[in-house]
Amino acid sequence: MSLASPYISKTEFLNYLTCPGYAWHLRHHGDARPSPDEGALRRMREGHHVESLARDLFPGGYLVTSRNPARADRETRAAMAAGYTVIFQATALAEAGMIARADVLVRAGEAWHLIEVKSSSADPEKPRDVVRKHLNDITFQSIAFHNAGIPVQQLSLLVLNRTYRRNGSVDARDLFVRFDVTEDVRAAELLVLPIIEDAIATLLNSRVAAKCDCHRKTRTNRCELFSHFHPHIPERNTIYNIGSIQRTSLLPALDRGVLMMVDWPDDIPLGARQRRQVEVARNGVEVAHREKIAAFVQQFAEPLWYLDYETFQSPVPLWEGYAPHQQITFQYSLHRIGSDGESSHYEYLAESSVHDPTESLLRQLAEDMGSEGSVLVWNKSFEFGRNTEMAERYPHYAEFLHDVNSRMIDLADAVKHGWWEHPDFQGSWSLKQVLPVAAPEMNYKLLDIGDGGTASERWMQAVLDSPCLLSDTERSAVLRALRIYCTQDTLAMVRIRDYMLGLLA
Ligand code: SF4
Image (cartoon, rainbow, N blue to C red; front, side):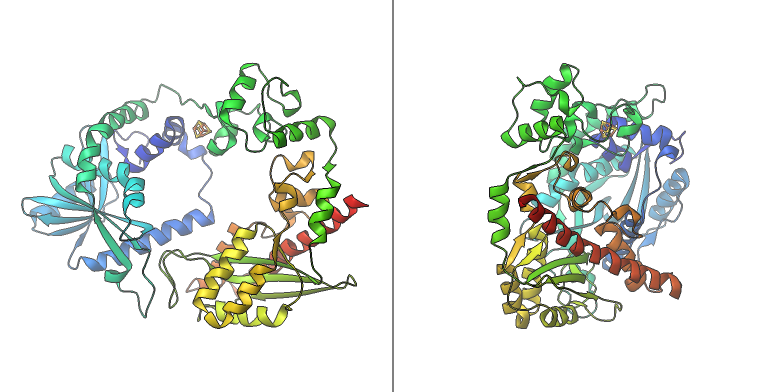
């Protein structure tokens, strides 16, 4: 949308609902915003793929191709006049100041049935969550089309069916489930209309600059513009970095002008762990609760197996038996440390997309991992959950996977429970935050791939994309970087456990 456009789009309205300041800034200074990352671009492509599959359900539809709003509106009306009964990307310019593009518009007598296609998934028997999630979105469309003089008598959401399991080629009739949301939208319109009017008045007014009030909230509310609005607030060591801090605790401290954690007023209540974190920050030295750590590490049975998975998700299942958005494990790293301290490393990385990689991954994991010893992971729910899902899909590995889960211990518990505290943890138990304390030389920022999201995205580029846009050299470099990254995750845990033992010395 051009900066001078007298219309707000649905995306702008949804941004406005999240934060008026954010929406205003994007509209008037959007060029200052960082370009979408590779993951965001893929999600857009996946969204387009889902939409194009949904079009199979409406044969003979007319696709509006103009991107210019006024031309798209004229093209839509021309298609209607020409007698088309299905129009994709039907566009309405509403005089009130809205532009709406409907994914599908189907003729229904003298009026139209508006259908929004979403990459979300839902259980056909439990539509409420997905309806709630997209209600503002489709209500904006309804009001805009009505205001543009295009009558809409029925509204539906078309989403991915969570109970679908791929069986052969993808059939859109099975992949999607449709929910009629006409009554929900009609009930919402009276509430949403005044908010749309506020959004139009705010976003079209270039003279009233955006405000940002996230300095009065916890860090979880922030968007990428926070440092732009509050350049004086440091990233670390502030009261916002106190773990699980609530707004009700933050506000009284902020009202007294307190910003840094070390200055926390003693008369403002904190939880026991939060207070310990403040103390650790004040003293500037780590605290180890030796008895707790000793009891924790003593339960580890040798040999020790350090395990880490990398996964990806796809809205449209790629292989037999998978559901929409199901996590698929494509890589593991496994370090074994024997009772004599001897270290061995095992790994698996799927390099071909012809078959579901899970079975060959499990075959190798079952060969690599012995039946004795504890399995150490960082954030147990992730590896535990993947094992449970893989056991369901491959029952002949169920006994092995359930046994691995029964031996699984979350190494992060030492930090999560506060048995080991360090000023540099900043109230977080993330591996990326804890590792620099135990092994400062192992810096994720120095790796070509330094986080799970990038690993997933790069693997898809190197292995899944067809055609692959990488040269052979680039592809090899990505696969090498993936191996290095996943190996670092398990080696990081080895070093952290060694560090914990050092705390007991
Ligand atoms: S940091 Fe928060 S208040 Fe500020 S623009 Fe972003 S979302 Fe809005």
